[in-house]
Length: 433
Image 1 (cartoon, helix red, strand yellow):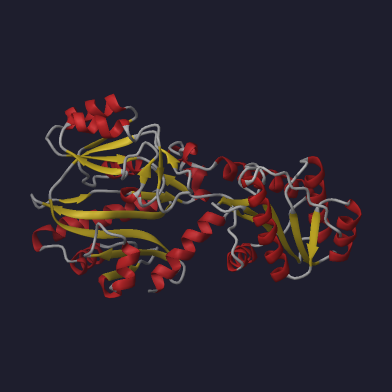
Image 2 (image 1 turned 60 degrees about the vertical axis):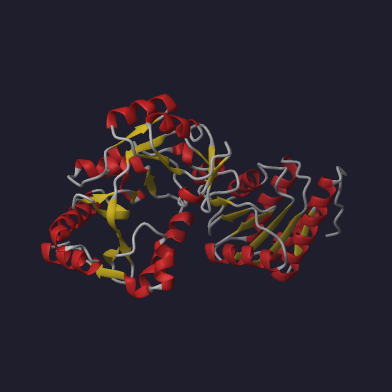
């Protein structure tokens, strides 16, 4: 469906942009919902196992859900380095709450959306387990095709909505919203009806939808996602979960929300790159990449994989990088020397001058005492000047005119370095330029 294509682009763009969106922890999102009159289960955040035990006792009852508070999807199927399987646990006593919390807090959770290192869990959300008779999916995001907010709903909640869209696209309901008129009572009731809420719950559901939209607008939201929104056994409409993403450009008027930012959930190198105005995302491979332009960067990663390699990162230096930015890019790429075994530089110089890139590469290769091979493919503005600079530098930089050739060489060289490391053999590269 068109929406899900747009949503994918939304997700990718927010990963690549220099100013990242603010994603709130679930417990912060639940507090926002409560403050706006939206029903959520009795719950509390805990930062120690003993505090989790105390909060469970305050909540009362015998059925609880303990949720790891990490900013990554797929928690339920994730795994902690403590050995615990799953970042969402159903338990039946405060003692069990404490036990599960002790296996979450202070440990890293690896999910399909994290790197192999996972995300550090520093808190858990202890929630009363509600027995539900029906689960729904609901979210509000921004749709570029209609230039405004869009409501998305489904009668199939509590599961991966992308899978639902792929297998049963008719189960997804979308309603574009006119930003000037917003979600009227009629629109909210129409959405609740089409989602399949029972008659006795429909008015509650419509009210919840309106309140969620009002919160989305006043908080400068990019995304509010409730999965699931449920009808409980008593006929109440309850938001069981909350994913809340805020527009980074709204920080000047959302100061209180931005105080909730958890920098510990961000990759240290990604934060460092952001400060240098570099678009960097750490990956799990061993071939470092430095490219100008997001599209070319993704194509470069694709061609590395095509030839049997694995990219260690996404790094877009942009169209106006300086020598110092290129130098900083190399420092970031090589921060984990045990992991990165080769570097592929792929630059198509339009606004970006190839000689500036070359100066930055040479500065990095000499001052950082890099011992891994650098494969460099430069084309465009001042490329001949760049080639002369590289040739005269006498550094271990292999220049290639073809991207295919450069990718193949980077993969081969990384394989050699990998084998050498495994055999504890020191390899020195003497490349003829």
